[in-house]
Length: 99
Image 1: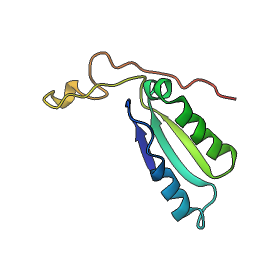
Image 2: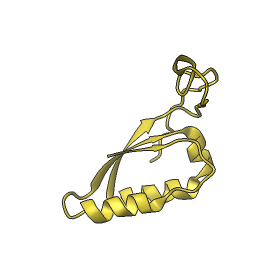
Image 3: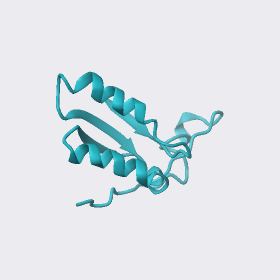
Image 4: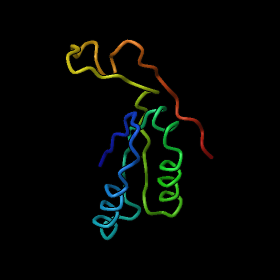
């Protein structure tokens, strides 16, 4: 399962994760998950990131973090060749070492 955490002002919808845990933990524990995450999301949602990390520490989730840039833009009327990850101003980003 993959989840995309694009830049957002909205809090994390934790029911997505708790629902996955409820449904899959009887089959596989920790529940494997890949999360595409942006640096901007991390900056705006430290409590949500801490919550996800706590699920990893508790052995409930196993998360593979996917670099999804620091911030990316989308435009409804912008051609794909200049949109999303290809948009001017999209910054690459390296996930900080979290020990």
